[in-house]
Image (tube, rainbow, N blue to C red):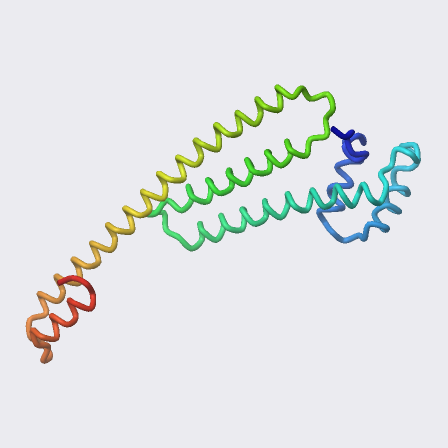
Length: 190
């Protein structure tokens, strides 16, 4: 296993500053390196500041994580805004967010460069994650079954309402029994 990146070995305030600047995305790598040297060179030795390549690698990892989180959050917002609660859309959005977080945790574990980590600890963490994923998957399947039942019940209710309206229509406005039968066949309520 490789050693920790130079960024993960930095003091928390410097690391946080770098993460913030990378998340903002306003500076090029060269501008960020120059900014780091200007801001932290007196507090740290020149050799402790990360290289351009280290900042780039760290930025890629951070960007991948932020993209996944943004996508999940946006999906959850859209689902909540567009769907009523009859299909429990908020639970679905929450499940998606938790799945993303578990995925990110597994990625973090795979990318862990901690030489002090005992392999049995790593196996234990993966085992725990697998158990949580199984529980989450069962929850997701149950939610999908619930949503399918709600959809079927809603469809049945609409068809019954349409059937009742057709039956109550009589022969108003020149609607014949043949026309009503054609409508029933088209709607699937024969």
